[in-house]
Image 1: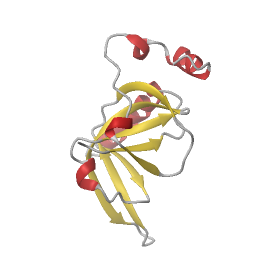
Image 2 (image 1 turned 180 degrees about the horizontal axis):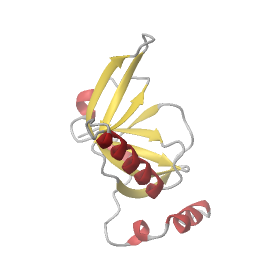
Image 3 (image 1 turned 90 degrees about the vertical axis):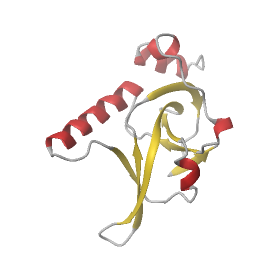
Length: 144
């Protein structure tokens, strides 16, 4: 069974906001002739790489709730210019809305077992189709 990662999506206010940022980054990379990969750089290198790359995803916490995930396709450790070990988490760039699951703030990333991961939302209906502002208000009221 694949293992997942959990990470705060700092700065994003909704799935649509994250998608807009992702589209912008891909357009910049395309204009620069770079590979269009969604890469998130983190300081810590996961030790359970094989489990993560066996179908795992990075689940994003937006505004205190797990709301969306992206499939992990590669993990690339490296050492930066200052000699600090870092890691590029490479994702497929396809956001998949999930059922909302509250999470408190934390630093870095956490492993997320498959049994603890929220289910994907069905496309074409339900919560995923609500306007972002309404989804946020319902979540703040504890109704999602």
